[in-house]
Image 1 (cartoon, rainbow, N blue to C red):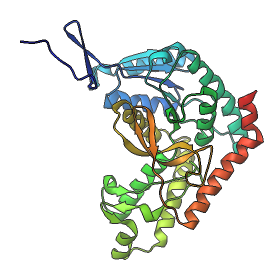
Image 2: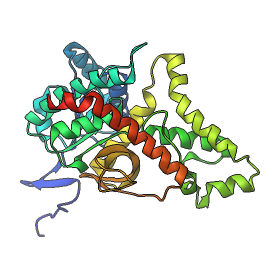
Image 3: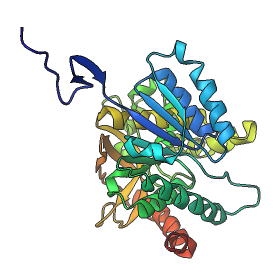
Image 4: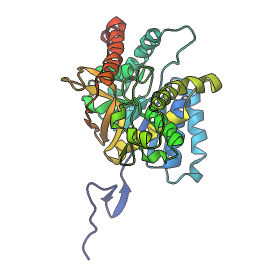
Length: 338
């Protein structure tokens, strides 16, 4: 009987007669509510062989590592969980950044962006000093701007840096549409595009329920078309409502980040509305990160999907990009280049 053979593209490698699982290492920078919601989801879902936690608060990081590790006997697979430092990024496949400050009462969006730009710059420099050459996923807000900052400072190829974009917004849309139409959210094929914020929009002409156009479903079911605008507004207001009631939102984005990471590690070519780089007139834009549908694989963004937008939708996307570029020009580019 000949020697055992393994698929070089498969999950296992053979070495000296034994099988060694492929390393699937993720580094999380920021152990706040969002980061730890992602970590907890990963622990329950499996698919990660090693998870490293990094935070400026070392004691909290150790505490989170201990708390997660005590759940390992109930997890679907073995996982190494560490409280570490940036040198751990060197051999990681994915780094997720959730660190940063939350917007304070009375603080302008620009002031928040300036503070978090300084934090992102320092974190990214520390990541790259390790020799990292994997995929960076940014979730810190304002996410489209912070993704731009990390991309500029890291110098990595544009496909290897992207943000969580409107993945959570899209999930909220599907949940609300599912409740409205009484159809499984898995069969609601609709996307939120643009900035992760108030200027987002839904390209309803490209929305489907199963294989049927959303607008036709609304018409056949005698649902008022104006309800679509109300549903989008409910999506926009959802975060504000949650924050008013419980001070923060983190479970949904934690699960969304876990899904995004899984798409990279599994090389599964999922379509997600991440904050990705537009260039050379894509969607009429150039040199900007914004939430659009993109195909995600093991190298990050494989390609973006360019939808044909109507005049009103294009104007909304243009407005989102204008807001982001104005903030960059006011101070963000200066901070990056200091």
